[in-house]
Image (tube, rainbow, N blue to C red; front, top):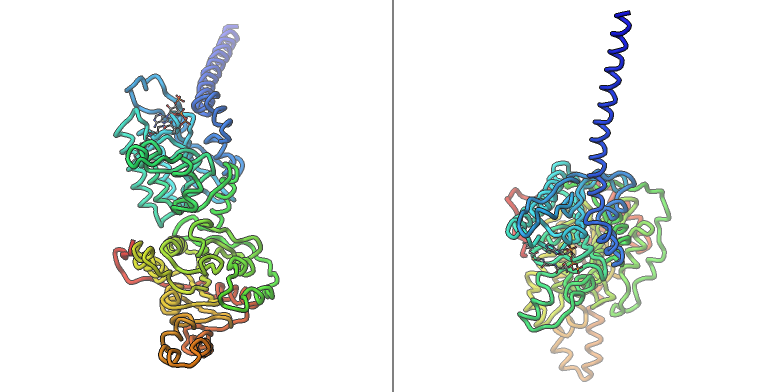
Length: 537
Ligand code: HXC
């Protein structure tokens, strides 16, 4: 009997402990769940609704759409600011205005931060900066691309210098990570003051039209200092930076398009500087492209669209243009050739005859350096009449800026292939990935004209006296121009010297490039040992 009572007591005891344990755990879980729910609400439903009304998504919605479904893991959800000034101790929001973490895009891992405008306008506090730095460090240590979705009123005004220090911590990391991992910035709201310098230090910037702007000083300060009246949109909207300054590489019409474009952009690059971009499966298609035979016009003064050449050479729908509206006399972007990611740099005869000027040189150089840093082979398509003459260009330093493109292409050690479709004149011939500056394979179409300058200008100089003394100077000038063109306006003098490896039929271009890039996929090259070069910035 005694034994039975004891067993009952023990049983009751364990039941009580068990139920106490359950309710204890339940409370803990409830607490965690309520914290998660609170963090997910950011600055609250009213502020979220306000963002939606503006046509903007929230930070978390953006991340959900950007990443493969269910792949995002948040880091630092429960972080709070430590500020006690201006009543800030009573205004704390879990996460402190930024969502940070890691996820996957097309199955490849990435690190992400997304500023949450519903919390103090996404402004950067000391703790927000710490969260961003932590995720950047994780990206660098693990060799993963770093994506920043920027939407912020700038430095957290209530925190003063602590916020400025936080910015500098981020800038420092952006600089050290440059060339180690791809860094991509999307501007999806305000980005003003010194805050612009973090995106500016990254590899690519995309802006969302009408909801984003970037400037060092806003319209009010501009009015005070220069008496200029300008709206935020005019001063630093997406179009201003896409067309005029070139600060943004890409523009999207809305958040959804921006995130889709970002996924696509990422597919052309590797995870870090030690890796190559994964090839897409290539099912052999029609490699001979007769349409390429019909692109070059009968007269060399007539323009044509170099993008038609790019589209014919590349895999279907694979061309992804960068900086489309800035310096359109040069075209840069990514494409695929037989599944391989390739960076293409091409003169555009359709705009300013494809001349090299200050802006096109800077645009080309920056793109070449990205491709070289991340092992993306380069294809250079040449139809260039030379450098743009004039005081505007000289005084804006076409010498130093043109040298940037020359330097970038000379320094690049990735596989480099050139195709001269038509003009390759003067110094621009050298600059545009000539054999002399390290191109691996140089092709030319039969329509190529490789010479010191165009036949007209050249013949007017060297036959000046004969033309002047002629009874019919105009006829003589034309005759001499044709004579000069006959000798030099072709690819054969260059081919005789081996500066051109092969003169190819346009229709065979894709086939030749597939084989050439395949051959070069094992290329190994290095630069002389040094601390770093000194590109003419
Ligand atoms: C703290 C801020 C804030 C900031 C906005 N908020 N910016 N809180 N610090 N920098 C808060 C607002 O108080 C508001 O809080 C909420 O965010 C939304 O702001 P609104 O003004 O209602 O939104 P909107 O009308 O869309 O205007 C957005 C804005 C404007 C244009 C960004 O808020 C603004 O001008 N903010 C100040 C920008 C600024 O001067 N930043 C400092 C720049 S200097 P409630 O509670 O109402 O929701 C700088 C130096 C960096 O950044 C240097 C780095 C080296």
